[in-house]
Amino acid sequence: MATSRLKRRLLLKELGFVEDPFIASADPRFLYLSSQHGEVLERTRDVIEEFRGLAVVEGGYGVGKSSLALRLESIYRGMMDEYKVIFVHTASYESEYAGLQDMCDAINVPRRRGLTKQWREFESFLIDQHEQGRNVCVILDDAQLMIRSALR
Image (cartoon, rainbow, N blue to C red; front, side, top):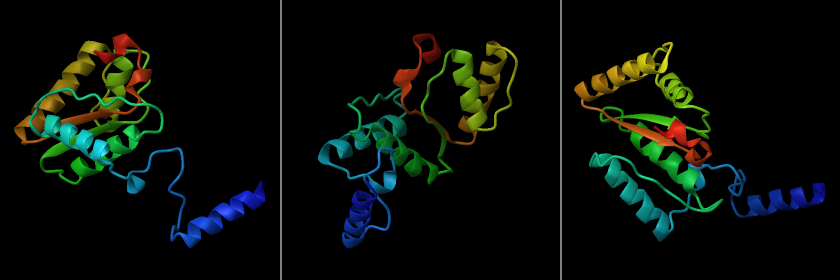
């Protein structure tokens, strides 16, 4: 086993890689934008930039959905005057309240006791962002792990 790892490292070094780009976890630095990826990225950006609401990206395991999500995050984090990004890795919430609290934690919105009070706090944040001329972009990776009631 150690021999195969050594061979792999040597091959990667020979190919000019300093680190292994062929790992299971998403890394947008190694995203190869095929024509399909480029089209999905462009359409998703249109939804965000034209304020069209919800965009859903579907696909099988390992096709690059998480890498595309991370690429979108990096694009919009680089435009901080125009966008506020909430990126949630592995969105597997048991309730609407848990998901809302996690999103609020990601943007330093204070936690409140009770779903209604938490929604009011989050809505206040959204209004504040709108008044500052920012579009809020929420990216949920692995949202299929959420139970239906948490998707409200």
